[in-house]
Length: 85
Image (tube, rainbow, N blue to C red; front, side, top):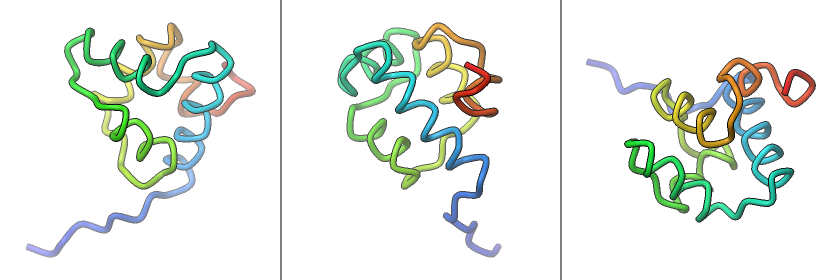
C-alpha cells in the first residue's frame, strides 16, 4: 500500500485559516478551543489545534464537525472560508 500524501490542498488550507480567524474573533485561546472540542468528545490538545491551524495536520471530518460545534457554526462555513461565516 502506498503512503498517503500529507500535502494539504486548497480546501484544507482555507479551512485551517477560517478556524484560526473564527477562534480569534471569538476571543478564544487555542487551549480554550481545544478544551471545548475535547468536552464534545473529540480529544484535541492545543498542539493538535495549532498544527491544524497552520495546515501542518489534516483536519478529518470528525475534527471538522467538533471544531464547528465548539465555534458554534455549521461545518460548511469552515470549508467555504470566512466570507460564509
